[in-house]
Length: 322
Image 1 (cartoon, rainbow, N blue to C red):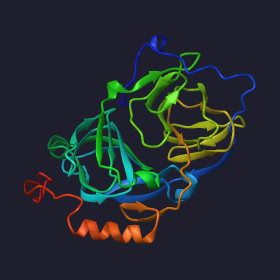
Image 2: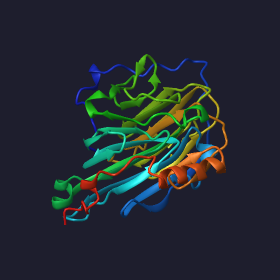
Image 3: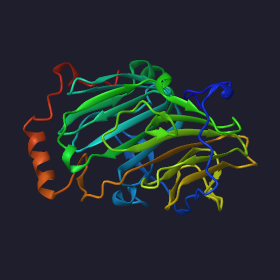
């Protein structure tokens, strides 16, 4: 997997050792993803919302996993111009290239291992499309998009865009040096990821080779989830099976346990994520996530009145490079 990595893990800081009195979080549910189409035809696997509701995923709203796959010339898809209000989109590109632009002035090209973190706030229009090279030539594509809710007091904040290059992610390893942990946002021990968040959360991408185990201290007040991108493994002290495109939901406790299967040559690639639940009403319609129905109606009014910004005239034509 082309995401940022390191050949010599002995140079990396260690995930803190687990206190002997720490309680492993039990696995309360294993959720299998549903298949859906997004944008201009991107096939995604979606663990939530679906088998897990938005309130159960708090403070997250949606997780879409596209790929891994190899596109031929003209086959790469993207998401043409569309609006958002009331939350943040976090696009983690494990392989390929995507070009982003938005009416808040953010944008750029991200490549393997890079992240674009867009705070829609009060409202923004944006697109995420393959670069011209990716469209013309094709190539590998693998991406994850996470929607992070905003609390009521910050839903109408000014839009913001963060580009987080792969080399800005904080790399860590386990006590035995076998795991690679890429910390995107939040804290693990004394190490803090580069993502600037409105909501307290932790988000990391972990690689575990065959038979390797990782125990990660996790704030007791945070929700906790593990999502398998590729490979097979186990979660929790009781070693519940976790297959590709499945999400493990953890119950109360002090640390998370994940382990790669012993009989697989392919590493287990998974996301660890969780955060402080917001515990506020959620009313959503498509790309708008607010607290009341009236606020959703206001979002439609503002979008139709052009208050989310205006698409540049040079972007109104077809950008598929056909």
